[in-house]
Amino acid sequence: MTDLLTNCKRTQYSKEITPDLNGKEITIMGWIHEMRDLGGIIFVLLRDRDGLIQITAPSKKISPELFADIRKLKKESVLAVKGMVQESPKAPGGVEIIPLEFKLLNESKLPLPLDTTEKVRAEIDTRLDSRFLDLRKHSVSAIFKIKSRMLHSVRVFLEKNGFIEINTPKLVASATEGGTELFPITYFEREAFLGQSPQLYKQMMMASGFDQVYEIAPIFRAEEHDTMRHLNEAISIDLEASFCDHEDVMEILENLVSTAISDVSEHCKDELKTLNVDLKIPKTPFERIDYDDVVDMVNSQGVLLTHGEDLSRAAEKAMGQLMEGYYFITGWPTDIKPFYVMPNKDDPKKSCAFDLMYKDLEISSGAMRVHQHDLLVERMKKKGLNPDSFNRYLAAFEYGMPPHAGWGLGAERFTMCLTGVKNIRETVLFPRDRRRLTP
RNA sequence: GCCCUGGUGGUGUAGGGGCUAUCAUGCGGGCCUGUCGAGCCCGCGACUCGGGUUCAAAUCCCGGCCAGGGCGCCA
Image (tube, helix red, strand yellow):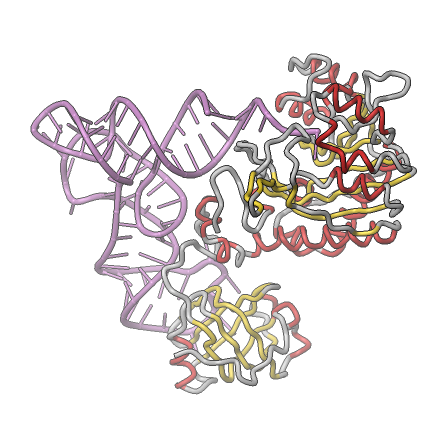
């Protein structure tokens, strides 16, 4: 029924078929996006990674056998088509392919669980159940091409700036860092957890003399949140730099963000157009707003925010109303930040922590860290943590830990900013949320 | 976890105590030589699960499961 690939090789992707190939014999491969059978002429829209190309089969120009075989084809089946490129003003894109022969590489079952031509929208739940089919839609794959480009450009930027890529364990022993819930797992005869952040490890790397490190890796959070901007498994772009303070790493962050945006807008034009996104490259430096001023700004919008509290969702939205684009919130109260955040030396109630916001969405948070062993122990105790359970971490601070700072940037949240999607699940191939563990 | 709303063919929907359960898309068949959301004709296909009220439940009530939105939680 179906054919094997044998010696058949793709010569072009759909977008490489241009009118100047007129008269050339080419081989393309892809999925049947749509068929229009007009009786004496059949149009097959073949889709590949990059787009669509029209196969035009006029009964008078091709053999009756080939014509009959084409008529039998089904949507979403996989095809290799050898044919002649024909320039034609009537064809979409001004070019089409007159088939000489084809191989049916695999047939698709029908009906499809969702409509790949997007005539009928499917709900996100239906789409995620059949994600492989959903991803055949260009409006969906565009998100992942943009995410890929963003991650690429982040790596290039960091390598250029002297950062070393590291890998830290995701299987961890300690649940004592405080804050978020961890996923417990069985590690042979012991209990272990999935890592919530590479924070402690990248700090230990500062004591190794690597100076500047980054990691792009999954983080796991066992919170039962059910929102459009939370995931239980996400990718964190994490960075830590020695002999730096928070101002230094904020500068790195804003430059990285604007570089990535400009790189995406240059290399993902088609994808951005598909998504109808007009990406503006933000000017650096980003605006810095002190937490004290944020409290006033939020309250001025009629949203109650008490000094010393973290931003509620309503407070974030109020800020989103007032601020365009990217901005930092600095000078956070020390009390609502983790133990490893450096208090401000002139006013210890305030810290050297910052968040990077895009409108009403927090996409990154970072800080200058405490590098003095005794202060770190004191901060842990104040937070109700037991320093004994941090022995291996604390040891790194006893043998020459340089001052350092760093941040973590949520890859999916940043992708939301780049693509304009409203639901963070759109930015993950196979998202993990409160209820979804498959596929 | 809480609040609100919902669950109807493969997909997306209308309806809302008894009628042949609406429409679009899809799928199957037929016609058609320039489609590009092709068109026309014929056909196929559905009321989330459990319990209750009722002569009668897809519709009303209770519970479960699931979803959408909002919030909370979230170094």
